[in-house]
Image (tube, rainbow, N blue to C red):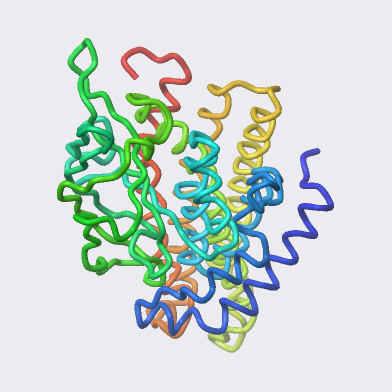
Length: 391
């Protein structure tokens, strides 16, 4: 029987207490005011959340990916904005530098990122290059010992905070022999001349998360800011997205769990026609369905996380992890969206009121089916993994 280790469950309890004391009392206000709680980030760093998968030499815990998913789930159970801050901070901010960076790049950026003194972002998406990420229009050319970057990015998480230190940007750096774009990844520090962080988006959900468009107007950075090999950027971000999909799946599990708990408690205490609404099968059966969805989503998520850890240990293959990540992300995120709809319905008129958290859950859910690859992309990846023609 699959189960998390005792250490994982003890760690879960620590993160849950943190989320209940440092996030839950304030999140309604942060959400209402579109406030990114920058002061919370160092506290998350002190708890070791940003360094879970980072080697000790850079200040991390040298732990496993499963622990990161546990932390994301528990934060996401209380609030999705804070959960995605950790997920993106590690998966899109730290991991590309950790995986592909030189020793000098790691020593420069990782200690502050691990400690929560800084955040990093990953600039991939553009207005005409989302699911079709290979269609990126941002360009970079070498001019002597400098890269000159021009273009724009959209919907970039953690990119405009007061402590954002660097953004990894994918850009065209030439063409391959077949005429396709040669895409590379380049580190652009915050404050670089010509690097403009646009105004924050007005979003349906994730109101306490930092999200901006970015513009690069002949930004000049040292040639040494190339992350990994020139032309390897496409493969790098595909690998980054595989890991990110498992993390988003964990975020979705946290949301579905929150809906299950809120609906169960409400069904026990809400009185209609002289009795708790939970005695009605129309309500109790929906809550039973929530339980099934949560359990299935959690198992798929932690199977994928386990496979990721096994891959790191050399005991599994990349295709196995890619397939498991897509399956987990597809099921968990669609289950979370359904869970928020069910929870809002169970709460009735109260579910439409912002004073009840299920209203926030409902708003936050939809992006889970979009970010880190849409549900349609996940189905394409899964079909391709099954060897279906033209997938």
